[in-house]
Image (cartoon, rainbow over the protein chains, first blue to last red):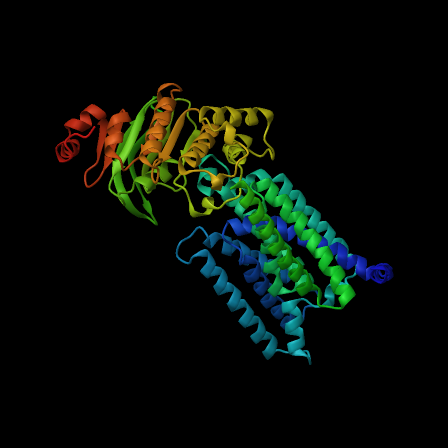
Length: 284
Length: 236
Protein backbone atom coordinates (compact mmCIF):
# COMPACT_ATOMS: atom_id res chain seq x y z
CA UNK A 1 0.00 0.00 0.00
CA UNK A 2 2.80 2.33 0.97
CA UNK A 3 4.64 1.60 -2.24
CA UNK A 4 1.57 2.40 -4.32
CA UNK A 5 1.12 5.65 -2.46
CA UNK A 6 4.72 6.59 -3.07
CA UNK A 7 4.40 5.79 -6.73
CA UNK A 8 1.26 7.92 -6.98
CA UNK A 9 2.83 10.95 -5.32
CA UNK A 10 5.80 10.48 -7.61
CA UNK A 11 3.59 10.59 -10.70
CA UNK A 12 1.56 13.46 -9.27
CA UNK A 13 4.66 15.59 -9.71
CA UNK A 14 4.25 15.36 -13.49
CA UNK A 15 1.81 17.84 -15.01
CA UNK A 16 0.68 15.40 -17.72
CA UNK A 17 -0.72 13.08 -15.07
CA UNK A 18 -2.74 15.89 -13.51
CA UNK A 19 -3.95 17.02 -16.93
CA UNK A 20 -5.03 13.52 -17.85
CA UNK A 21 -6.93 13.14 -14.62
CA UNK A 22 -8.75 16.47 -14.96
CA UNK A 23 -9.71 15.98 -18.60
CA UNK A 24 -10.65 12.33 -18.12
CA UNK A 25 -12.93 13.04 -15.19
CA UNK A 26 -14.63 15.96 -16.96
CA UNK A 27 -15.30 14.01 -20.13
CA UNK A 28 -16.66 11.10 -18.12
CA UNK A 29 -18.97 13.53 -16.31
CA UNK A 30 -20.31 15.06 -19.53
CA UNK A 31 -20.92 11.77 -21.30
CA UNK A 32 -22.70 10.26 -18.29
CA UNK A 33 -25.07 13.23 -18.04
CA UNK A 34 -26.14 12.73 -21.63
CA UNK A 35 -26.09 8.96 -21.28
CA UNK A 36 -29.24 8.83 -19.18
CA UNK A 37 -31.24 10.65 -21.84
CA UNK A 38 -29.72 8.73 -24.72
CA UNK A 39 -30.28 5.31 -23.17
CA UNK A 40 -33.89 6.19 -22.38
CA UNK A 41 -34.46 7.54 -25.89
CA UNK A 42 -33.19 4.20 -27.23
CA UNK A 43 -30.10 5.83 -28.67
CA UNK A 44 -27.49 3.88 -26.73
CA UNK A 45 -25.47 3.33 -29.86
CA UNK A 46 -25.35 6.93 -30.97
CA UNK A 47 -22.01 7.32 -29.21
CA UNK A 48 -20.62 4.49 -31.28
CA UNK A 49 -22.10 5.79 -34.52
CA UNK A 50 -20.99 9.37 -34.05
CA UNK A 51 -17.51 8.45 -32.98
CA UNK A 52 -17.12 6.46 -36.19
CA UNK A 53 -18.30 9.51 -38.08
CA UNK A 54 -15.66 11.51 -36.25
CA UNK A 55 -13.12 8.84 -37.23
CA UNK A 56 -14.14 9.19 -40.87
CA UNK A 57 -13.92 12.97 -40.58
CA UNK A 58 -10.41 12.66 -39.13
CA UNK A 59 -9.43 10.56 -42.12
CA UNK A 60 -10.74 13.23 -44.46
CA UNK A 61 -8.87 15.90 -42.51
CA UNK A 62 -5.73 13.78 -42.78
CA UNK A 63 -6.13 13.40 -46.52
CA UNK A 64 -6.66 17.13 -46.92
CA UNK A 65 -3.51 17.64 -44.90
CA UNK A 66 -5.15 19.82 -42.27
CA UNK A 67 -2.95 20.33 -39.24
CA UNK A 68 -5.86 21.32 -37.02
CA UNK A 69 -8.62 18.84 -37.76
CA UNK A 70 -10.86 19.82 -34.83
CA UNK A 71 -13.20 22.28 -36.65
CA UNK A 72 -13.88 19.95 -39.58
CA UNK A 73 -14.38 16.89 -37.37
CA UNK A 74 -16.68 18.85 -35.06
CA UNK A 75 -18.80 20.19 -37.94
CA UNK A 76 -19.25 16.83 -39.67
CA UNK A 77 -20.09 15.10 -36.38
CA UNK A 78 -22.65 17.73 -35.38
CA UNK A 79 -24.42 17.49 -38.72
CA UNK A 80 -24.56 13.69 -38.44
CA UNK A 81 -25.90 13.90 -34.87
CA UNK A 82 -28.69 16.22 -35.95
CA UNK A 83 -29.60 13.95 -38.87
CA UNK A 84 -29.55 10.84 -36.66
CA UNK A 85 -31.78 12.22 -33.93
CA UNK A 86 -34.16 13.51 -36.61
CA UNK A 87 -34.63 10.08 -38.16
CA UNK A 88 -35.71 8.85 -34.76
CA UNK A 89 -39.02 10.59 -35.36
CA UNK A 90 -39.31 9.62 -38.98
CA UNK A 91 -40.33 6.08 -39.73
CA UNK A 92 -38.71 5.31 -43.05
CA UNK A 93 -35.45 4.16 -41.47
CA UNK A 94 -35.70 3.35 -37.78
CA UNK A 95 -33.33 5.01 -35.30
CA UNK A 96 -31.21 1.95 -34.56
CA UNK A 97 -30.86 1.02 -38.23
CA UNK A 98 -29.87 4.57 -39.14
CA UNK A 99 -27.22 4.63 -36.42
CA UNK A 100 -25.85 1.26 -37.53
CA UNK A 101 -25.73 2.39 -41.15
CA UNK A 102 -23.88 5.62 -40.49
CA UNK A 103 -21.59 3.97 -37.97
CA UNK A 104 -20.39 1.16 -40.19
CA UNK A 105 -20.36 3.30 -43.31
CA UNK A 106 -18.23 6.05 -41.81
CA UNK A 107 -15.81 3.54 -40.30
CA UNK A 108 -15.30 1.74 -43.60
CA UNK A 109 -14.95 4.91 -45.68
CA UNK A 110 -12.58 6.45 -43.15
CA UNK A 111 -10.32 3.41 -43.21
CA UNK A 112 -10.50 3.28 -47.00
CA UNK A 113 -9.48 6.93 -47.30
CA UNK A 114 -6.62 6.49 -44.83
CA UNK A 115 -5.44 3.47 -46.78
CA UNK A 116 -5.52 5.07 -50.22
CA UNK A 117 -4.01 8.38 -49.25
CA UNK A 118 -1.75 7.12 -46.53
CA UNK A 119 0.96 9.55 -45.47
CA UNK A 120 2.12 7.64 -42.45
CA UNK A 121 4.39 4.61 -42.39
CA UNK A 122 2.48 3.00 -39.53
CA UNK A 123 -1.09 2.94 -40.80
CA UNK A 124 -2.45 0.15 -38.65
CA UNK A 125 -0.92 1.80 -35.61
CA UNK A 126 -2.67 5.05 -36.46
CA UNK A 127 -6.02 3.37 -36.98
CA UNK A 128 -5.68 1.38 -33.80
CA UNK A 129 -4.96 4.44 -31.72
CA UNK A 130 -7.89 6.36 -33.19
CA UNK A 131 -10.22 3.47 -32.48
CA UNK A 132 -9.05 2.46 -29.05
CA UNK A 133 -7.70 5.73 -27.77
CA UNK A 134 -4.04 6.46 -27.85
CA UNK A 135 -1.79 7.73 -25.17
CA UNK A 136 -2.80 11.18 -26.35
CA UNK A 137 -4.57 11.81 -23.09
CA UNK A 138 -1.15 11.59 -21.48
CA UNK A 139 0.29 14.13 -23.90
CA UNK A 140 -2.25 16.93 -23.53
CA UNK A 141 -1.08 20.51 -23.77
CA UNK A 142 -2.30 23.12 -21.27
CA UNK A 143 -4.34 24.71 -24.08
CA UNK A 144 -6.20 21.46 -24.74
CA UNK A 145 -6.83 21.04 -21.04
CA UNK A 146 -8.42 24.48 -20.81
CA UNK A 147 -10.49 23.81 -23.91
CA UNK A 148 -11.83 20.62 -22.31
CA UNK A 149 -12.51 22.42 -19.03
CA UNK A 150 -14.38 25.19 -20.85
CA UNK A 151 -16.51 22.89 -22.98
CA UNK A 152 -17.30 20.60 -20.04
CA UNK A 153 -18.38 23.55 -17.91
CA UNK A 154 -20.62 24.68 -20.76
CA UNK A 155 -22.16 21.21 -21.15
CA UNK A 156 -22.86 20.92 -17.42
CA UNK A 157 -24.34 24.42 -17.32
CA UNK A 158 -26.63 23.76 -20.29
CA UNK A 159 -27.67 20.44 -18.81
CA UNK A 160 -28.59 21.99 -15.45
CA UNK A 161 -30.45 24.90 -17.05
CA UNK A 162 -32.44 22.66 -19.38
CA UNK A 163 -32.76 19.73 -16.99
CA UNK A 164 -36.56 20.00 -16.68
CA UNK A 165 -37.03 20.45 -20.40
CA UNK A 166 -34.77 17.52 -21.20
CA UNK A 167 -36.76 15.37 -18.79
CA UNK A 168 -40.08 16.40 -20.35
CA UNK A 169 -38.87 15.80 -23.88
CA UNK A 170 -37.28 12.45 -23.03
CA UNK A 171 -40.23 11.09 -21.08
CA UNK A 172 -42.97 12.07 -23.49
CA UNK A 173 -42.19 14.03 -26.59
CA UNK A 174 -45.73 14.32 -27.91
CA UNK A 175 -47.09 15.58 -24.59
CA UNK A 176 -44.30 18.12 -24.35
CA UNK A 177 -45.07 19.34 -27.85
CA UNK A 178 -48.80 19.46 -27.16
CA UNK A 179 -48.35 21.80 -24.20
CA UNK A 180 -46.12 24.08 -26.21
CA UNK A 181 -42.55 22.98 -25.41
CA UNK A 182 -40.33 23.43 -28.43
CA UNK A 183 -39.35 19.75 -28.39
CA UNK A 184 -37.57 19.88 -31.74
CA UNK A 185 -35.32 22.65 -30.55
CA UNK A 186 -34.33 20.69 -27.44
CA UNK A 187 -33.70 17.56 -29.48
CA UNK A 188 -31.39 19.62 -31.65
CA UNK A 189 -29.65 20.96 -28.56
CA UNK A 190 -29.15 17.42 -27.24
CA UNK A 191 -27.77 16.31 -30.61
CA UNK A 192 -25.25 19.14 -30.76
CA UNK A 193 -24.04 18.56 -27.20
CA UNK A 194 -23.71 14.84 -27.83
CA UNK A 195 -21.57 15.51 -30.89
CA UNK A 196 -19.32 17.95 -29.03
CA UNK A 197 -18.81 15.58 -26.11
CA UNK A 198 -18.03 12.68 -28.41
CA UNK A 199 -15.39 14.56 -30.38
CA UNK A 200 -13.83 15.57 -27.06
CA UNK A 201 -14.03 12.06 -25.68
CA UNK A 202 -12.27 10.53 -28.67
CA UNK A 203 -9.04 11.89 -27.24
CA UNK A 204 -9.58 9.92 -24.10
CA UNK A 205 -10.89 6.51 -25.01
CA UNK A 206 -10.98 6.42 -28.79
CA UNK A 207 -14.05 5.84 -30.93
CA UNK A 208 -14.82 2.26 -30.01
CA UNK A 209 -15.06 2.82 -26.29
CA UNK A 210 -17.08 6.03 -26.20
CA UNK A 211 -20.33 4.09 -26.14
CA UNK A 212 -19.16 2.52 -22.90
CA UNK A 213 -18.71 5.93 -21.30
CA UNK A 214 -22.20 6.91 -22.42
CA UNK A 215 -24.09 3.74 -21.52
CA UNK A 216 -22.47 2.11 -18.51
CA UNK A 217 -22.94 4.79 -15.84
CA UNK A 218 -26.57 5.36 -16.88
CA UNK A 219 -27.42 1.66 -16.91
CA UNK A 220 -25.64 1.04 -13.60
CA UNK A 221 -27.51 3.92 -11.94
CA UNK A 222 -30.84 2.64 -13.24
CA UNK A 223 -30.26 -0.69 -11.47
CA UNK A 224 -30.50 0.99 -8.10
CA UNK A 225 -32.26 4.35 -8.33
CA UNK A 226 -35.87 5.04 -9.18
CA UNK A 227 -36.23 8.71 -10.01
CA UNK A 228 -34.78 10.63 -12.93
CA UNK A 229 -32.90 13.03 -10.68
CA UNK A 230 -31.26 10.34 -8.54
CA UNK A 231 -30.36 8.29 -11.61
CA UNK A 232 -28.73 11.33 -13.22
CA UNK A 233 -26.77 12.28 -10.10
CA UNK A 234 -25.68 8.71 -9.46
CA UNK A 235 -24.58 8.24 -13.08
CA UNK A 236 -22.51 11.42 -12.91
CA UNK A 237 -20.83 10.51 -9.62
CA UNK A 238 -20.24 6.92 -10.69
CA UNK A 239 -18.76 7.94 -14.00
CA UNK A 240 -16.31 10.43 -12.51
CA UNK A 241 -15.20 7.98 -9.82
CA UNK A 242 -14.70 5.19 -12.38
CA UNK A 243 -12.77 7.47 -14.71
CA UNK A 244 -10.45 8.66 -11.94
CA UNK A 245 -9.88 5.10 -10.71
CA UNK A 246 -9.34 3.87 -14.25
CA UNK A 247 -6.74 6.50 -15.05
CA UNK A 248 -4.86 5.89 -11.78
CA UNK A 249 -4.84 2.14 -12.33
CA UNK A 250 -3.73 2.62 -15.92
CA UNK A 251 -0.80 4.77 -14.82
CA UNK A 252 0.21 2.41 -12.02
CA UNK A 253 -0.15 -0.78 -14.00
CA UNK A 254 0.85 0.60 -17.39
CA UNK A 255 -2.39 -0.54 -19.06
CA UNK A 256 -4.15 1.35 -21.88
CA UNK A 257 -6.14 4.22 -20.35
CA UNK A 258 -9.41 3.88 -22.31
CA UNK A 259 -9.88 0.15 -21.85
CA UNK A 260 -8.99 0.38 -18.16
CA UNK A 261 -11.66 3.01 -17.53
CA UNK A 262 -14.24 0.87 -19.32
CA UNK A 263 -13.18 -2.18 -17.34
CA UNK A 264 -13.77 -0.26 -14.11
CA UNK A 265 -17.18 0.86 -15.47
CA UNK A 266 -18.10 -2.77 -16.18
CA UNK A 267 -17.12 -3.78 -12.65
CA UNK A 268 -19.25 -0.95 -11.26
CA UNK A 269 -22.18 -2.13 -13.36
CA UNK A 270 -22.05 -5.62 -11.86
CA UNK A 271 -21.63 -4.19 -8.38
CA UNK A 272 -24.69 -1.94 -8.69
CA UNK A 273 -26.71 -4.73 -10.34
CA UNK A 274 -26.01 -6.81 -7.27
CA UNK A 275 -27.00 -3.99 -4.94
CA UNK A 276 -30.16 -3.37 -6.97
CA UNK A 277 -31.15 -7.00 -6.73
CA UNK A 278 -30.46 -7.01 -3.00
CA UNK A 279 -32.63 -3.93 -2.40
CA UNK A 280 -35.35 -5.31 -4.67
CA UNK A 281 -35.26 -8.56 -2.71
CA UNK A 282 -35.73 -6.76 0.59
CA UNK A 283 -38.64 -4.71 -0.76
CA UNK A 284 -40.45 -7.78 -1.98
CA UNK B 1 -68.27 30.92 -29.12
CA UNK B 2 -67.16 27.31 -29.05
CA UNK B 3 -63.84 26.34 -27.46
CA UNK B 4 -62.81 24.29 -30.46
CA UNK B 5 -64.17 24.52 -34.01
CA UNK B 6 -63.10 22.30 -36.90
CA UNK B 7 -64.15 23.51 -40.32
CA UNK B 8 -63.92 21.28 -43.38
CA UNK B 9 -60.91 19.64 -41.74
CA UNK B 10 -58.82 17.00 -43.53
CA UNK B 11 -56.19 15.05 -41.64
CA UNK B 12 -53.61 12.47 -42.71
CA UNK B 13 -49.94 11.65 -43.18
CA UNK B 14 -47.48 12.79 -45.85
CA UNK B 15 -50.11 14.74 -47.73
CA UNK B 16 -52.40 11.69 -48.00
CA UNK B 17 -55.69 12.36 -46.25
CA UNK B 18 -57.11 9.67 -43.98
CA UNK B 19 -60.15 11.65 -43.07
CA UNK B 20 -61.78 14.47 -45.01
CA UNK B 21 -64.42 17.14 -44.67
CA UNK B 22 -64.83 17.07 -40.90
CA UNK B 23 -67.06 19.71 -39.35
CA UNK B 24 -67.69 19.84 -35.63
CA UNK B 25 -67.41 22.11 -32.64
CA UNK B 26 -66.89 21.57 -28.94
CA UNK B 27 -68.20 24.00 -26.33
CA UNK B 28 -67.04 24.48 -22.76
CA UNK B 29 -68.21 21.63 -20.53
CA UNK B 30 -68.93 19.19 -23.37
CA UNK B 31 -67.97 15.53 -23.17
CA UNK B 32 -67.21 14.42 -26.71
CA UNK B 33 -66.46 10.80 -27.55
CA UNK B 34 -64.75 10.01 -30.83
CA UNK B 35 -65.60 6.46 -31.88
CA UNK B 36 -64.79 4.46 -34.98
CA UNK B 37 -62.88 1.49 -36.35
CA UNK B 38 -59.11 1.08 -35.97
CA UNK B 39 -57.34 2.98 -38.72
CA UNK B 40 -60.25 5.32 -39.30
CA UNK B 41 -58.04 8.24 -38.34
CA UNK B 42 -59.09 8.93 -34.75
CA UNK B 43 -55.56 9.28 -33.40
CA UNK B 44 -54.48 11.30 -36.43
CA UNK B 45 -57.37 13.67 -35.81
CA UNK B 46 -56.33 14.05 -32.19
CA UNK B 47 -52.71 14.75 -33.10
CA UNK B 48 -53.88 17.37 -35.55
CA UNK B 49 -56.03 19.07 -32.91
CA UNK B 50 -52.97 19.15 -30.63
CA UNK B 51 -50.88 20.70 -33.44
CA UNK B 52 -48.51 17.73 -33.37
CA UNK B 53 -49.03 17.56 -37.11
CA UNK B 54 -50.41 20.02 -39.62
CA UNK B 55 -53.90 19.59 -41.08
CA UNK B 56 -54.01 18.72 -44.78
CA UNK B 57 -56.91 21.04 -45.36
CA UNK B 58 -59.45 23.09 -43.46
CA UNK B 59 -59.00 24.94 -40.19
CA UNK B 60 -59.01 24.35 -36.46
CA UNK B 61 -60.04 27.36 -34.41
CA UNK B 62 -59.85 27.75 -30.67
CA UNK B 63 -61.97 30.28 -28.87
CA UNK B 64 -63.74 31.04 -25.63
CA UNK B 65 -60.47 31.88 -23.90
CA UNK B 66 -58.80 28.59 -24.83
CA UNK B 67 -55.31 28.80 -26.25
CA UNK B 68 -53.68 26.09 -28.35
CA UNK B 69 -51.21 25.09 -25.65
CA UNK B 70 -53.89 24.89 -22.98
CA UNK B 71 -55.17 21.53 -24.09
CA UNK B 72 -54.16 18.78 -21.67
CA UNK B 73 -53.29 15.50 -23.33
CA UNK B 74 -53.37 11.91 -22.11
CA UNK B 75 -51.45 9.98 -24.76
CA UNK B 76 -51.35 6.24 -25.18
CA UNK B 77 -48.40 4.86 -23.27
CA UNK B 78 -45.22 4.40 -25.21
CA UNK B 79 -42.75 1.56 -24.89
CA UNK B 80 -40.11 3.96 -23.57
CA UNK B 81 -42.23 4.93 -20.57
CA UNK B 82 -42.65 1.38 -19.35
CA UNK B 83 -39.10 1.19 -17.98
CA UNK B 84 -38.43 4.89 -17.46
CA UNK B 85 -36.86 5.67 -14.07
CA UNK B 86 -38.92 8.62 -12.90
CA UNK B 87 -40.83 9.36 -9.74
CA UNK B 88 -44.53 10.19 -9.84
CA UNK B 89 -43.83 13.71 -8.65
CA UNK B 90 -41.32 14.37 -11.42
CA UNK B 91 -43.78 13.26 -14.07
CA UNK B 92 -46.74 15.24 -12.74
CA UNK B 93 -44.58 18.33 -12.41
CA UNK B 94 -43.49 18.01 -16.04
CA UNK B 95 -47.08 18.86 -16.95
CA UNK B 96 -46.31 22.44 -15.88
CA UNK B 97 -43.66 22.62 -18.59
CA UNK B 98 -45.86 24.67 -20.92
CA UNK B 99 -46.34 27.28 -18.19
CA UNK B 100 -42.60 27.72 -17.74
CA UNK B 101 -41.80 29.10 -21.14
CA UNK B 102 -38.10 29.91 -21.13
CA UNK B 103 -37.75 29.78 -17.35
CA UNK B 104 -35.51 26.81 -16.50
CA UNK B 105 -36.97 25.78 -13.14
CA UNK B 106 -40.43 25.29 -11.66
CA UNK B 107 -41.85 27.96 -9.39
CA UNK B 108 -43.50 27.38 -5.99
CA UNK B 109 -46.88 28.00 -7.59
CA UNK B 110 -46.31 25.27 -10.15
CA UNK B 111 -45.20 22.84 -7.47
CA UNK B 112 -48.41 23.57 -5.57
CA UNK B 113 -50.38 23.03 -8.77
CA UNK B 114 -48.76 19.62 -9.18
CA UNK B 115 -49.54 18.74 -5.56
CA UNK B 116 -53.18 19.74 -6.10
CA UNK B 117 -53.43 17.65 -9.25
CA UNK B 118 -52.01 14.63 -7.39
CA UNK B 119 -54.54 15.20 -4.62
CA UNK B 120 -57.38 15.30 -7.09
CA UNK B 121 -56.26 12.06 -8.69
CA UNK B 122 -55.74 10.52 -5.23
CA UNK B 123 -52.10 9.64 -5.90
CA UNK B 124 -50.43 11.92 -3.34
CA UNK B 125 -49.28 8.92 -1.34
CA UNK B 126 -47.44 7.64 -4.43
CA UNK B 127 -45.48 10.88 -5.02
CA UNK B 128 -42.07 9.37 -4.29
CA UNK B 129 -42.72 6.04 -5.98
CA UNK B 130 -41.20 4.95 -9.25
CA UNK B 131 -43.55 5.21 -12.22
CA UNK B 132 -42.62 1.86 -13.75
CA UNK B 133 -43.50 0.00 -10.55
CA UNK B 134 -47.11 1.23 -10.49
CA UNK B 135 -50.15 -0.65 -11.74
CA UNK B 136 -51.71 0.27 -15.06
CA UNK B 137 -54.54 2.21 -13.44
CA UNK B 138 -52.17 4.14 -11.18
CA UNK B 139 -49.98 5.02 -14.16
CA UNK B 140 -52.97 6.41 -16.04
CA UNK B 141 -53.89 8.53 -13.04
CA UNK B 142 -50.36 9.90 -12.91
CA UNK B 143 -50.58 10.90 -16.58
CA UNK B 144 -54.02 12.39 -16.00
CA UNK B 145 -52.63 14.47 -13.11
CA UNK B 146 -49.88 15.64 -15.44
CA UNK B 147 -52.47 16.68 -18.02
CA UNK B 148 -54.33 18.60 -15.30
CA UNK B 149 -51.16 20.57 -14.61
CA UNK B 150 -51.19 21.71 -18.21
CA UNK B 151 -54.82 22.81 -18.31
CA UNK B 152 -58.00 23.37 -16.38
CA UNK B 153 -60.04 23.83 -19.53
CA UNK B 154 -59.84 20.96 -21.97
CA UNK B 155 -58.54 17.38 -21.85
CA UNK B 156 -57.87 15.13 -24.80
CA UNK B 157 -57.77 11.48 -23.86
CA UNK B 158 -56.48 8.84 -26.25
CA UNK B 159 -58.04 5.52 -25.22
CA UNK B 160 -57.55 6.12 -21.50
CA UNK B 161 -58.74 2.67 -20.43
CA UNK B 162 -56.95 0.41 -22.89
CA UNK B 163 -55.27 -2.44 -21.06
CA UNK B 164 -57.02 -1.82 -17.74
CA UNK B 165 -59.12 -4.42 -15.98
CA UNK B 166 -62.91 -3.86 -15.70
CA UNK B 167 -62.90 -2.53 -12.13
CA UNK B 168 -60.09 -0.04 -12.77
CA UNK B 169 -61.74 0.91 -16.06
CA UNK B 170 -64.91 1.87 -14.17
CA UNK B 171 -62.90 3.94 -11.68
CA UNK B 172 -61.13 5.69 -14.51
CA UNK B 173 -64.40 6.55 -16.26
CA UNK B 174 -65.84 7.90 -13.02
CA UNK B 175 -62.74 10.00 -12.39
CA UNK B 176 -63.02 11.51 -15.88
CA UNK B 177 -66.73 12.12 -15.40
CA UNK B 178 -66.12 13.96 -12.15
CA UNK B 179 -63.54 16.18 -13.86
CA UNK B 180 -66.13 16.97 -16.49
CA UNK B 181 -69.09 17.45 -14.13
CA UNK B 182 -67.52 18.97 -11.02
CA UNK B 183 -64.57 20.89 -12.44
CA UNK B 184 -66.26 21.83 -15.71
CA UNK B 185 -63.35 20.58 -17.81
CA UNK B 186 -64.19 19.89 -21.43
CA UNK B 187 -63.37 16.29 -22.33
CA UNK B 188 -62.60 14.86 -25.75
CA UNK B 189 -62.03 11.13 -25.59
CA UNK B 190 -61.09 8.55 -28.19
CA UNK B 191 -62.69 5.27 -27.30
CA UNK B 192 -63.28 1.77 -28.60
CA UNK B 193 -65.87 1.21 -25.95
CA UNK B 194 -69.13 2.36 -27.53
CA UNK B 195 -71.32 1.49 -24.59
CA UNK B 196 -69.20 3.57 -22.21
CA UNK B 197 -69.16 6.37 -24.78
CA UNK B 198 -72.94 6.39 -24.86
CA UNK B 199 -73.12 6.29 -21.10
CA UNK B 200 -70.87 9.24 -20.30
CA UNK B 201 -70.63 11.43 -23.39
CA UNK B 202 -72.79 14.42 -24.22
CA UNK B 203 -71.74 14.43 -27.87
CA UNK B 204 -70.55 11.71 -30.26
CA UNK B 205 -68.27 11.95 -33.27
CA UNK B 206 -68.54 8.70 -35.19
CA UNK B 207 -65.86 8.24 -37.84
CA UNK B 208 -66.40 5.56 -40.41
CA UNK B 209 -67.32 5.43 -44.08
CA UNK B 210 -69.80 8.11 -43.17
CA UNK B 211 -69.20 10.63 -40.42
CA UNK B 212 -71.71 11.51 -37.74
CA UNK B 213 -71.47 14.40 -35.31
CA UNK B 214 -74.16 15.42 -32.86
CA UNK B 215 -75.56 14.97 -29.41
CA UNK B 216 -75.97 11.56 -27.88
CA UNK B 217 -79.75 11.61 -28.36
CA UNK B 218 -79.36 12.42 -32.06
CA UNK B 219 -76.77 9.69 -32.40
CA UNK B 220 -79.11 7.03 -31.09
CA UNK B 221 -81.61 8.01 -33.78
CA UNK B 222 -78.99 8.07 -36.56
CA UNK B 223 -78.27 5.11 -38.89
CA UNK B 224 -74.92 4.39 -37.17
CA UNK B 225 -76.41 4.63 -33.72
CA UNK B 226 -79.38 2.44 -34.61
CA UNK B 227 -76.98 -0.17 -35.92
CA UNK B 228 -75.35 -0.27 -32.54
CA UNK B 229 -78.66 -0.29 -30.72
CA UNK B 230 -80.05 -3.27 -32.60
CA UNK B 231 -76.72 -5.08 -32.97
CA UNK B 232 -75.86 -5.17 -29.31
CA UNK B 233 -79.33 -4.99 -27.87
CA UNK B 234 -78.75 -1.51 -26.50
CA UNK B 235 -76.16 -2.58 -23.96
CA UNK B 236 -76.08 0.88 -22.42
